[in-house]
Length: 139
Length: 135
Image 1 (cartoon, each protein chain N blue to C red):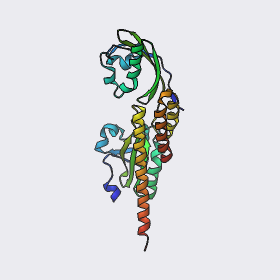
Image 2: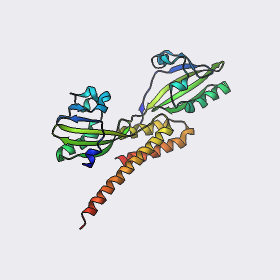
Image 3: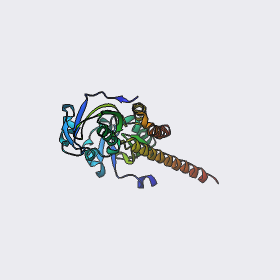
Image 4: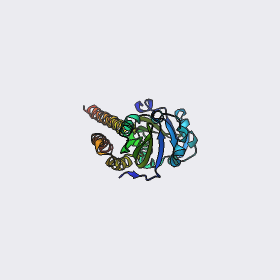
């Protein structure tokens, strides 16, 4: 079972070059200092996980919603085009991995993987198999 | 002797009540403020993982080596009893990278490989010991 983390919905606004140009009040403390920076520079390794969805939202002009794993967290993200290439991103943290012990990792990993979208099935299975090896071998 | 010479530089020395009485230089940044405190006070959930190995070292009076997982890292733990307390050497072997499912999978595989290597080493030591027992 994942550690379920229900939080206030947070949002930021990106310009057409993925720079943070606006931050909602619930994200102010975390992201406020990042206004003006490029999102991918502030969150290393996140670009290939999120950008394809953002590009799809810009291309279609329609909101895109997805669930993604990043930095030990699973979050539901909604990318809404608001004109001129800008996007409003809303996200809700759904779960967080607890890596304190192998037991807590095992308990939280299963739940976190279950929350992910269907197109991540192969990666879910790969990480699940790797974890199973470690956890069974480590006990 | 082999264990002592291969002991990681990062270590703490604990008294009989698990109070930190010394912190080696490489640990000063992260554990330096812990001198005088009980080792577990700032390491939630660590006691159940570390203590059986520390208890074995104290009970036998001999160094105990183990591989443990704590706080997202696979660590080599070496507990060496001495006159001034129990020296607990810790070396990080593999750190889980939770950036993405891909990095998590790769680091879990590294962790698995490290555990397998350690298991082979243990097996090798046992075999070697049993061969030496032959006439």
